[in-house]
Image 1 (cartoon, rainbow, N blue to C red):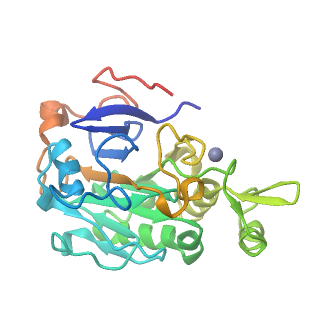
Image 2: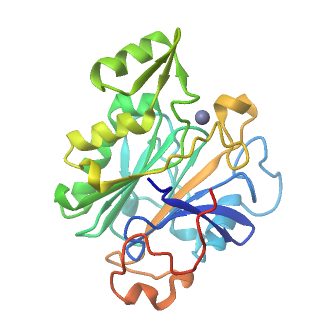
Length: 281
Ligand SMILES: [Zn+2]
């Protein structure tokens, strides 16, 4: 399985872009530790808001950004109903319009869901608490509301996150997931490790988004200290990565500068890399 995220430079940011899922319909990015930093302890005390800087680097107006105040729950907001700068408590956003969805991560799993029929896009922040609380089902339900409602047309991308190589969990958490999601808890000696992406895959499948329509990164945020911050590895001092996504052809389509006329050229082959920037993992 090849890694669906490949490095690209946008402004001062080194980012990973996922082109494996209809890149002419939705733009999906995940930032790395290289470039302006998003939050504590690296938050700068003066100067431009790093999120604005991030949107600018992507050729997007900052006013289109919508985010939540992430609380490890299962509340999903319709981004088209939120105002710029509003930070409602929640862990997911969906849009069928021009809004840019953003969330921040330090080990948790970013899940993008794309309704290719509408089109409509969702971005979910999913750690074990969110997965247990039902963020995947809630995200798909919200996507149905703004999108076509046809689960057969939904595809998903699972981003970089802490992998089962590193994500040791306590006995209680391990037992809860082990009973519901076979194979998602791995035992090594007396230790138990949770595979967040495997839980998400099984939850997506249970909601009608089957394996062949799910694209998954294999990158571990804890192992890959060259690329990522990690809360498990760096503790409370850990920085954050941003996941970001927007529809290139939403109902109120505003093309971003970088996509240029390519968005009008119709669907190309999936996974095509028109810029010639290659995977370097
Ligand atoms: Zn790892």
